[in-house]
Image 1 (spheres, rainbow, N blue to C red):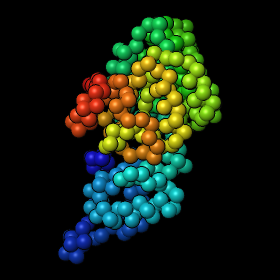
Image 2 (cartoon, helix red, strand yellow):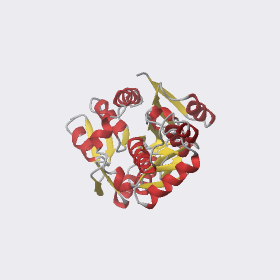
Image 3 (cartoon, one colour):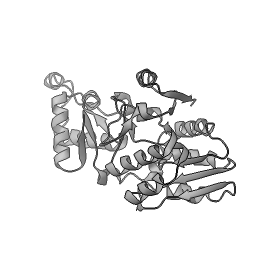
Image 4 (tube, rainbow, N blue to C red):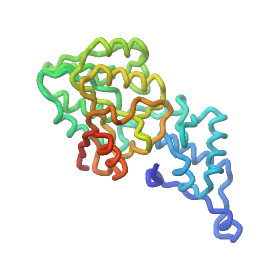
Length: 279
């Protein structure tokens, strides 16, 4: 994960501290700032944190182990993500405003993939929520979604047939989830599914912050003939705690022009169609 996603005052190296160039940051302060960064970015790698804070990877691993033992982060391959109760403190409305310009542009481009008379499934997520704005003006669509607020907004259109899938309501995701939701989605074949994601890691795995959300996304993808992932450039090289699927299982990825060449090469190598939205 690139170190450009956040700006953190770096800790001086040991030699700098000894030479009087800068005082070393106390470990308690460093751990708090590491936690703040992980929560803000919804995950971070050891390499990224080592670069941001100017300390060794051994030190970062020890800090992450300390935070994990306190129950506030969850270790994942090569890094850490916020524990569920920490993640849930980030409101849906706040996540909506993060990289909003890119999300709106991605949604607008994704809307060009819609065709009249189709049945589509819209995942719960902030970028897919933006897609709902364009879906509302489309004629003759059937929209299946577990996202309660999105369903309520779309049902105001007399041109759409909206199917809200019930289940246990997650107030932070503004969506239903769980076995009932997964079963409901499996009963409705759809032409296209539009998914969001917590992130895509460096191995090309689409990742989420809970097993429940990952299972729901897999159920949506399984029900669809074509799966379209909406993921802005900040979502790449992101750690998670649960795997949804390999990126090669996605038919189309819609991202923005900030997407790294590394991510573009990965998609090309795995035969995934990429659409780039201008920002």
